[in-house]
Length: 189
Image 1 (cartoon, rainbow, N blue to C red):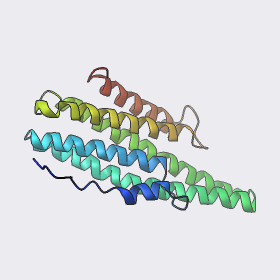
Image 2 (cartoon, one colour):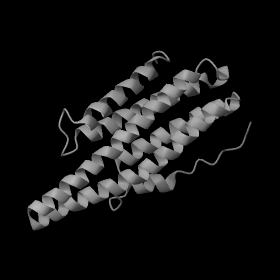
Image 3 (cartoon, rainbow, N blue to C red):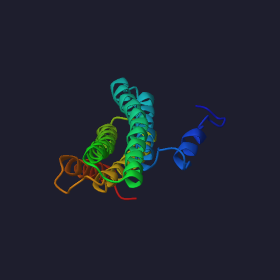
């Protein structure tokens, strides 16, 4: 095991998330938090010689990294369309474009929540098979994934075109609940 300080450089991502000129915001942050949880699950699986689980976790990690970028793009486009509408006024074509872009900005966080729920479930499925030293890491990964799923669900629910009975709203809430339920399987803190 490594005894020197590891490379955990995340400054560029944090700078992007904190920049007022970049579109990346909470959705991208939730996706990255989910990717971190997936990386921890992959590590626990590798140490425990569980290559199939490690591959699943790495696939989810890569997907969430893509979602972080996709969310920033979708959010940036939606905010730009809102600004154009505010500056130029409403119009049938402009409103249609805005609605389409807002709908796209709702779909990505829903997908983030689903991937995070999958990570939490993967962590729970492995809790009895991984090396005992890494069981607390799986519990923490499930908690991270649950928090990220909750954040993603919130972003879906507050989207300007979302209604309580939208499929994405219902699904996002279900993903967040599923991830939270799984994280609780590891016991109370």
